[in-house]
Image (cartoon, rainbow, N blue to C red; front, side, top):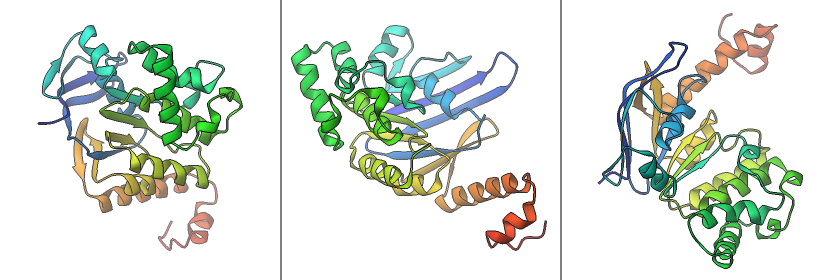
Length: 252
């Protein structure tokens, strides 16, 4: 039985840009799946479709083999599918960390005492319990990322959708987040442009190509990233200097 499945996904933006055409993706229990592709190909849109925040032209969405078709069913899905946004500030609303983390459990119907308990457990599991009374806006980027993850984990999701989780983090914060992600039992789909992070956290790799989601091998993912990086460098002034400095002897 698949944990999460999306089939027959067709999405075209109002400006006429086609994003998905008969696309599909499946997530098995305990699986950690990478989704890598260039910007503008629909990665975040996929997460918004899964959680009911974006309505495509067509999509068949199943959670534990049960179809999700209306807003009430999407509300139930969002209690089981945690979505960690790319920008942590978009997910932190309250002055204190503990209030942000407890928001989800309270909406699940827990009492204030129960919500505080599971929130402290989530913070403790991530090694940041000391931040519970901190002011969210005073946290570092890495701390904010961990707090937003605690916000989602406090709801005990079966599926985690992580959108560029290491974006903007320094090396130490990135490594800590990778270690945390690897300890999470929930099935995961991770969007990232960071091939090292994806290689360290995922066992299955996919990309968006020609408006469809396709499986790729890990080496292919690295090759695509290096090609994308090479094109980026080539568009810079003094491209030849940069390539020689990096040890790339390709002719320019």
